[in-house]
Image (tube, rainbow, N blue to C red):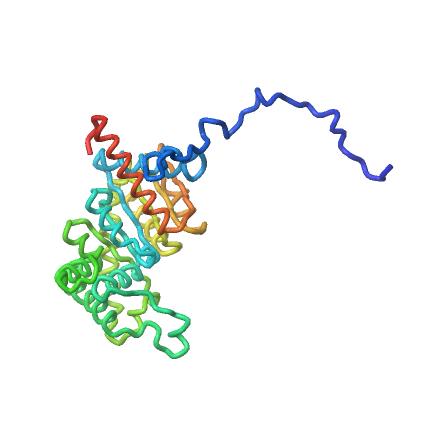
Length: 323
């Protein structure tokens, strides 16, 4: 007999599984598609659990917001460009699934390089030891020139970049997302942290012009968020900068009279980050709102979300709803 007391498991008060509340049951299980070519069967067969459930709730929230004329704001970090998703982002605009797009400076740089030169994203580890990282003249000249023009014309940086990219449409190697935003009249705001982008290394960089243009974009975002009630805001791929910008713009909008009731927020990213969880998912939604955090790689998760949006909207249209 040991020296230490043990719990007497024979004294436990047990129950029946039939009386127990369970979180997983037959209706929530996956149903593999019979037709491997049917996205509809694949979508409908996803398990009604965890991230799959959140993804479908997010789809319904986005479609409801657009149906009711409420904003759908997308915030994109640079990896969304670097994972090959620019054509899909342009389709979001064409399908009326975005009312404003907020991006960081790196997104704008990668997007402009892809549009104008058909390539982007340096091998940093190879270029850094020789001091060549971030030293492309053409990139700096274009982006820094846009900042100067924006400050001179009283434009936001996103507006200036979109206007200048659209003016060079004939030179595009692939269609430009910021150019498409400008052409369609959808605000694109660029939020810059001085010193974080490669164009800040160059002698033609103006902190004054860039700051003025990016500050204007902050005010444009805050103005758009004054219709916050019933809106949807999604953060895709920005771990720090855009969650911080959104929280402050949200505060400004509420201070000016906006309501965060029924606000739905989401972060879609491949890792959990504190600022995304707090500043996007948890803090902003008011009464009747909700936030969700869905983990996944951008190049897989965003196409899945987009296709689900098209499918569910077509179903609503065919059943008598408005597009």
